[in-house]
Image (cartoon, rainbow, N blue to C red; front, side, top):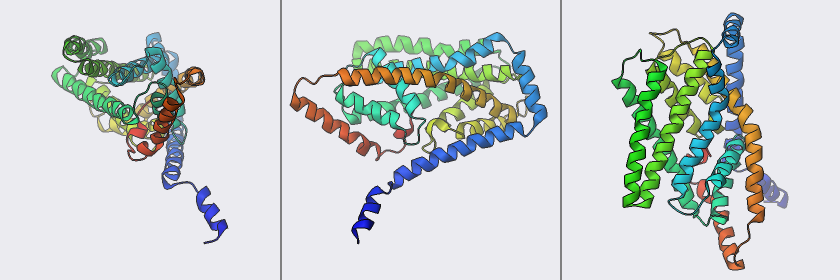
Length: 337
């Protein structure tokens, strides 16, 4: 093999790198396809625009500011899970999650890798413990979705939105009490239940955001539709193909709504439109928020001083393991934050 061939092989991207880039491109194409699908019916598009112009003010406020509340609850959930392994400040964790939220939209998804590397060097938390916290975050999200489905199965299908929120908020009070008792037994167990509390709160905010987006479009959806659409959205965001479920989420929500629209006027087109509305709101929020949080994280990184050269070397070695460990776990790489 010639030196030229060797250099070419060294410069060629690894298969996993090519896969992530192709996944990002695939997500962009799906998103463009969703936009084309929406504008392909001018009548519906005009109707959506008119409905949005005359929609209740509360729906617009929820859609615009809902992503900020999700960021807070996800940050608090991960903070609780990381506290099981070391000391991490709340503001510090929120900054890390905000930065990762923005960076994970890039093809190489550097947000999660950067956050775990930060924990290894600054917070003295092992790479595997950080990954374990991210896995627990996904597990708790699945548990929260299961609880929500169980709740809507027990209530009437025509339950108003306000009452639905009240029913879904009941587990929050339960987990708050359980976490208080769990802390008396074990700090780790207490933080785990606290993480579940914040994951349930995050899920509830997602449901309210979808209900608000459909309200903007002039549609009322049933409690079961809200839960199913939100669950599909959550799953789409952790599928290891596109960052943040880009494109997959829009089509997944649309298909789920279309399959469950026998008793309501909700259609696949209206569901895709609702998710696109939420996507636009997220993008408006994540860009300035992510830039600010990235600046805070960078400042913390630059101001950190190791106690000794030996400690610094050990932390650098831990940070070097981040990419290696993450390459062994494709699913974790695609968790939020």
